[in-house]
Structures are given as C-alpha cells and as structure tokens.
Length: 93
Picture 1 (cartoon, one colour):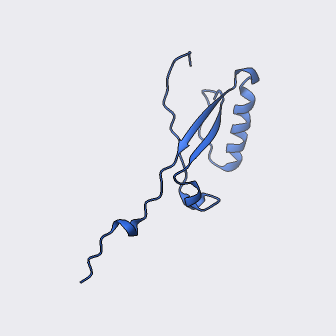
Picture 2 (cartoon, helix red, strand yellow):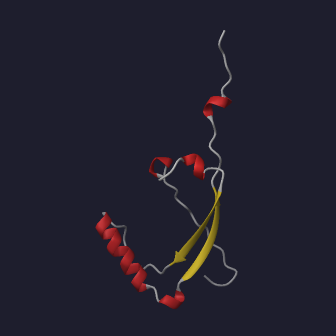
Picture 3 (cartoon, one colour):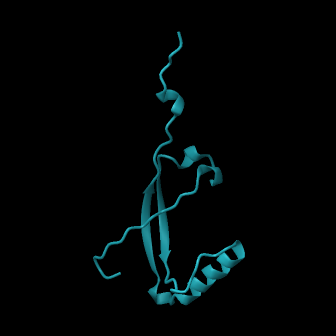
C-alpha cells in the first residue's frame, strides 16, 4: 500500500468453545495484537489439511524478503457477554 492509503481488515475470532480460558476473561476488554504483513504469492491456494497449511505458511514466510515485512498494531475491543437471564422479564402468575 502507498502512504495514506486505506484498506479494510477482517478479523475472524473463533467461537468461545475454542478459547483456552473462560470467555468472561476476554469479553469487555481491549486486546492488543501485532500483525505481521507478508507477501502471499498469487499461485497460493487454501490448504486442505494441517500439514499443507504448515508448509504453505513456511513458504509464504520465506517468500517475503525480511526488510519488506511490516508490522501493524491493532486494538480489538471484544463486547461484553450479555446475560440472557437478566434481560428476560418474569411472567409467572
């Protein structure tokens, strides 16, 4: 990208089932992330399994010259977890 150019970044966050800790520890907090920007060759396709993904990531890393790698700092704020029980009104008679 040229100076002062913009682009959108989409971040895919896996469901909380795959998080190593309780989701409440992550929710409602700001997370600082450093992203390394690498050059992906045009002929690269989506890997079919973990071994192919590992080989592809190694190839992408080696294909990017060291002095052209850039790092981007992101601040991600995950929303608080909404308690479904507190938002419901009681209808008991």
